[in-house]
Each structure stands twice: as structure tokens, then as C-alpha cells.
Image (cartoon, rainbow, N blue to C red; front, side):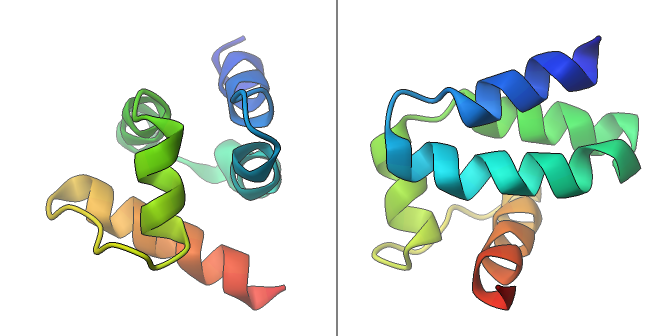
Length: 81
């Protein structure tokens, strides 16, 4: 149930750009995440779309901390396609 909820939130952000960045990542990665990683992803979904988009597009450096690793993985995923 939690994975479905997180996947839905990743695909329904409010902006199409964020849907297309977070949705495919959630589809590909959520199943293999630990409980701690899921907590961090859920916390990342609480961030404002404008901030997340700036971080993921490289317009601003992402904040330090555990979310930095998650954002780095999102960036790698985005550029791997």
C-alpha cells in the first residue's frame, strides 16, 4: 500500500515536469528501496516542486544531508536515459 501511495504521489505532483522526473524513478526504484530509503523519498516528495526542479535540473545545488544522496541518484537516473 505504501509503495502505491508513493508511486501515485510521484506521478501526480501538480506540474508535468515533476511528474516526468519523479514518476519513472519511482516506478524503477521504489520496489528495491529499504524502509529508510522510502522514508527519505517520502520526505523528498514534501519539498516544493520549484525547489526540486531547480535541484534536478542543476540550476541550484541540492542541499546537503541524506537527501543529497537521493537527489544524486535521481540525477543519475534522469541522465541515464
